[in-house]
Structure formats: C-alpha cells, structure tokens
Amino acid sequence: MGGHGLFDRGALDAAGLGLSDIGAVAVTTGPGLSGALQVGLAGAKAIAYALGVPLYGVHHLAGHVAADILEHGPLPDPCMVLIFSGGHTSLLLVRDLARDPVVHLGDTLEDAVGECFDKVARVFRLPCPGGPAVDRAARAGDPRAVPFPRPLPGSYDFSFSGLKTAAARWTEGHAGRELPAADGAASLQEAIADGLTRKAVAACAEHTVGTLVVVGGVAANARVRAPTVERCRAAGIALRVPPPGLCTDNGAMIAAVGDLLVRAGAEPAPLNVPVDPSAPLEYATPHPVTAQAVAA
Image 1 (cartoon, rainbow, N blue to C red):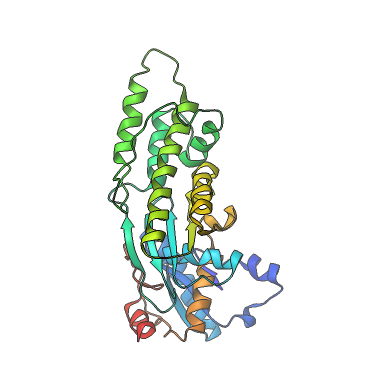
Image 2 (image 1 turned 45 degrees about the vertical axis):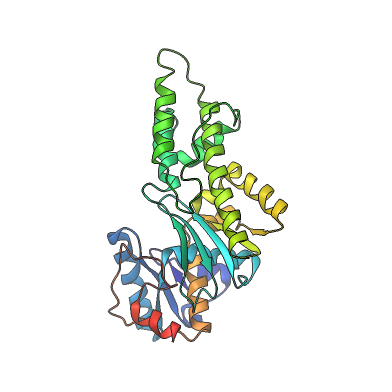
C-alpha cells in the first residue's frame, strides 16, 4: 500500500483486499510540510508494525515520476523526466528509478511554476488555486498578445520570478482600464510552456534519450502540454503524460515506488526512520541506508 497521508480503507475495499493482503507499506518521508509528513509516517509505521511487514520511505518527487508507470508501464531506461508542480520544477535524467541515482539537469532557482501561477492569478484578479484559474481564463485569450520573456535561455535551470514581475508590470500598465486577463493568462501560459518544452526536448537530444515523461500537478494543464506534444512529435521523441488524476498528489504513486523498491530488493527502512521535510531527490527513497543498499 502507499501512503501520502492518513490511511484510507477505501482503497483496499475498492481492490477487494484486506489488511492481511498487504505485503509492505510505502509512505512519503520527504520532502513536504513536517506536520503532514509526521502524521502519514506515524500511521504507516503503526500499520507496518501491526502487520509485521517491511516499511519503505519514499521521496515525494520519485512518486510523481513513478505515477506514469501506473498508466503506461515500466519506464524506459533511460528516460527524461520533466516534473512541474506547485512546489517543484525539475528536469531529470532517470535510469532505473529504484536502483540508480537521479541525475538533475535543471532545477528551479526560486519559485516553482505552480507558485508562479498562484501569484500571477492574484495580480490578474483571478481566483485561487492559480493554475486552474489561469488555464480557464487562457482559453478565451490570445497566447501571442503579450510578449512575456522566456527565462534562462540556454540553461536547463528554471526561473519564474521575471515572469511574475513582467505580469505585474503589464497589469500596472492597464491602470484605469479594463484588464484583458484572458490575453495575459494565455500569454503567460505560452511563455511557460514554450520555455519548459524547449529545455526538455533539447535535453533529450543532447543526452540521446528517446522518451520524455511529464509529471506533476501542472502537467494537467492542457495548454502547457500542447507545445510539448508538438515538439516531441517533430523531434521523434515519445511523450508520456499520466492522466490528470495521477498528476496531482496521490497515494498510488507512492505505492508504485514502494513496489519498485520491493522488486529491486531494497533494504526496508527502520521503524524509527525520521521525516526529512527538505530531502533532495537523489534516490527514490530519502532514507540514506536504503539508498546505499540499493546502489550497492
């Protein structure tokens, strides 16, 4: 079973299984809010102890990567993974997720793309959460109406502070006039999608990788996905994107990583394993002993 928070019997009931059918417990141990991680980990430890089954600590972002396995099957070795969610934007070279270290080609230097959507939505006087609100508004807008910048060209790293500033300045320029928020939203999404897509496809070409996997909550944004589909098709790159229900945080993605760790013969975490709210993504598990055992 996978745990991203409190235990839910509904998943077992839907699968026609009982507690006695559980062979291992996987739970998010980082990164994230400490309180939420502690609650989930305490529940997972109790279940693992009561059932006498191994416990596996899972890295939250590795869960997002593994979410695609639930829809499309095993990940190709190697594959390029673009994670973009409310708190993280990363471009990763992934081989065997359960055994090999994750190679970071690019990461967010400050705000992640989801935070950019939230802050720009407030500037555009759109409701929260920002991502869905910007996406809805953008459908009625012109993506070429506002020449927002493409941050950090020539680098695989990501920066969205300049986009936030540009959106604020553009909004200020409409003081006393009606704000064409739909055009602003469409142009913002175009700038973000264009930048993300160019970097991801360029990384695939540089590293001779034939598959790009796009995951994370913002992967559910239709306009952000569209240029990725077009550019991957033109470059002959296979594109894999989980359905929206698997893009956002869910327990199934954590269970998917746990399954990989079990199959790889990874060492379980001890029952006193702590949470790590700021755990870097180095292996599928933030637990150092397990990571060393897997790599050995």
